[in-house]
Length: 114
Image (cartoon, rainbow, N blue to C red):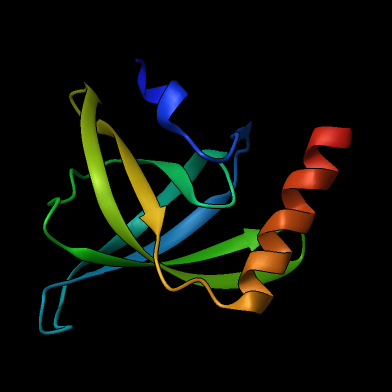
């Protein structure tokens, strides 16, 4: 079974700028930065960054989808080095509130229909 076979939600390609803040188990900020989404689904994103992010950290993402800013908490499920200064970080959303979930769903549906 491939990784894509395990996905509950399909992903769509999307290039959106993201700012992120990484926190330890005590919610202390240990890292922050910018990246961009490579793809997005209702349950997670693939984030491209210039920094490798520790898999044990929690992450708070601020994503601009069209003209809407969404703040989403997530957990890092995998990290892959693409080249010397580029990493693909798989993030699963956690605790997504109803408003953010609706905004993500709307964005994904509109993107798929275009």
